[in-house]
Image 1 (cartoon, rainbow, N blue to C red):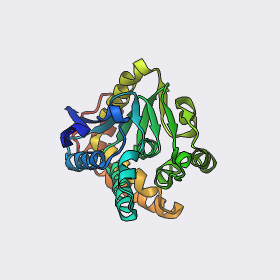
Image 2: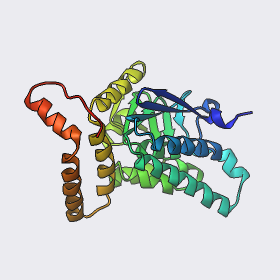
Image 3: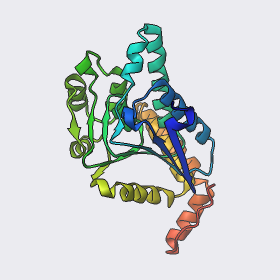
Length: 261
């Protein structure tokens, strides 16, 4: 029997939190229990001001095969499905709203809500053997909720093609379409993610948190409103001690010492 703390493994290394999906035999499908455990882990970590970065990983051959179809089939009720998709949607929004960058570390296939999970993360690095699809259409179900995240990463024609055909794209194609940042040989995945994490953690914590919040919020604004918001955000950011330190360090050709304020 699985227990709640087994669904998502949590590991903290200094300012980096790694959450690992841990249902390898079920291809890390997003059962109710996994959704709940992952949501709880995000909620618990969101208020940690010492956190610099979050990595979302998975065990086994698959990153995430989407919703748990067996569980869904066993609960054939529209009210149940409405609640399930609302729960999943809230999780994806929590990732978008999480105060520090969230990096998907994709070691294997990511389909349907698993592809949605990748698209919801701020950054994604994948093994070059990984593949991506929104394949609900193959069982008669259009992946409507994954479409929300996918279409905010991938262009309209390509995202709709993926949704309406259910066909896989390679990691290399996923890079070209903007779904992931880079694809690397599988044996270099750990190092590639660590390098990206290290780069982010070397920046001012104030700038990173400001940037994460600002970038996501402005995407839904009109051009004029986005510039107004961006200007105000930069003006506030300029008052941070880290900016004073960063400019002084740049002018004096030394490495900055961030204060985090």
